[in-house]
Each structure stands twice: as structure tokens, then as C-alpha cells.
Length: 211
Image (cartoon, rainbow, N blue to C red; front, top):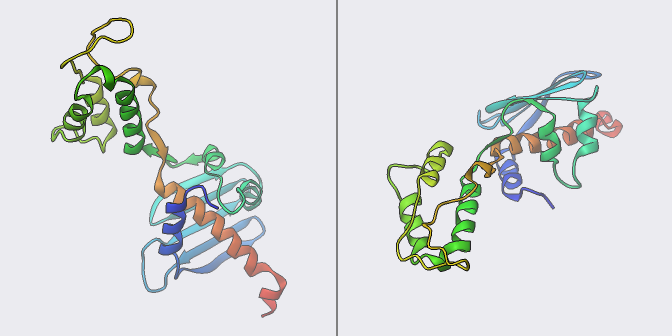
């Protein structure tokens, strides 16, 4: 069972016809290439030197640093049947493991709306119109999303709350919202590294070499 099934399925689909080419294999110095011979899409390479693993390919590159043998680090820290994105992100020294997530933004917005809409008639409809359907602010981008929620205020037909207050509705604690989540390409890279090590180990088995 995998923690990120959609990305796992996408990785399996996009790399179904990839082949491994070993360009270098000298102890802790490795250079592996994975690509579809018929297509240039979603190719990637993994190189290791003592204490470092570099993932590069058809997207952003990532550099991981920790143990002398990085393959062993990834083997030991992988979750059963999957990856360990949180731990591996801590070891990622170059590359953006996380990026703005509209899904997270929506979770914060609708949670506060759900908590307050009993006091504000049609609040949900207004939020949908003023925040998510506004042609000026595209909440697919973090800066625009923050601008629109920080400037949002709703007063129409305010009912007194439990304390008898009739304040207008504003979003609270926006500066504390954690709007970043793992970037899909970083998760793709994690699955690629995990799968690469499995293929590499299988190719090095005595029976594989003998055949």
C-alpha cells in the first residue's frame, strides 16, 4: 500500500517501457540511466558518490546527502511497499521538495467557512464567487491566494454569535496557514529512486549475472 497512490500509478504508467542502462558501477560511484528507447519523456538518471545521490532528468533535479552509501540509506528508510517522502525531503539539499498546494489552501478556506457560516447568510456562496471565481485573482498561485483571503470581508445579514457579536467575517490566522505540500515531481523522483534501487539490486544478483 502506497502513501501517494496517484503519483505511484503515474510513475508506473509513465515508466512502463523504461530500460535501465548502467553507465558506471564502481563501488559507491554509480551512474544509472532509465529511459524509454522510443521516447524522450520522463527519462531520469541517478548518480551516487560517497555521501551523495543526485536525481536528474525530465524535470527539476534533486540532491540528497547523508550516508556514505546513499542506496543503503534509501533501502533502510523506505516505508514498507512505498517511499518515505517526509524523511527523504529532510535529506534533500538541492531542489524544491514542496510547492504551493491549492488543495491545502481550499482546506483552510472551507474549514473556516464551515465554522462560521451559521452566523453569515450565504457566506459559502459569496466565498465561492469572490475568491474562487474572481477573474482577477487566480488562486492556483500562492501570492494571489493570500492577497484575496487577506482582503476578504463579509458583512451581509450577520447574526450574533454566542457572545452576541455582530462582527464581519474575515479569515483568521492566515499567516499560520501551511500552504505547501510535496511537489508531484519530487514524489515522482522518490518513486524513481526506490524503483531504480530495486532494479539495480536485481541486476546484481548472481543468478541475473549468470544468465
